[in-house]
Image (cartoon, rainbow, N blue to C red; front, top):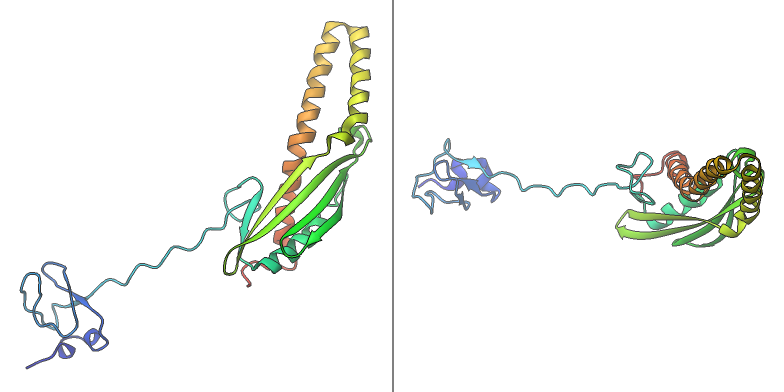
Length: 221
């Protein structure tokens, strides 16, 4: 009597096949389908579909690692490697009117830094400070979550607000209600730009710097 291994090479390895009539899975060495009774021959047998592989873990965040996700990104390196790259990327924020400095670090979980912006057109030449906090956590083997929080230090903008108040009073005196309305819009836009847009820009620049740091280290564990 013929054995299942004579019908198909897959049976010799114990790989189950599929009945050609009812698509039921039949065990190795079976000569008949247990579901419909169909006789199994060499030509009729077909291997079962290979088990589906789990989808790859998506890379989230900004700066080319997927869809922007505000202030966090998942990178394909271990926690210490992510910390080292983040530490290097902080220094890369010192560009143009921005000057970044490290405040403290607790490897491999936390980095605190400060960014000072001094721009004649944006801040009237008065330094404006931002406090940054980076949290790095392990989410899976060889994967780390990097979260960045940047906040405006409002005490640093008091001199700028004082100058804005003087300008508002002056324009109101010379131009009346029109001057007050026009300059109030400028002040509101400046506050929004300084407290919202600048931190968002710095966060994007930080993630972009992580991509470039140390010859693209992502993907190594």
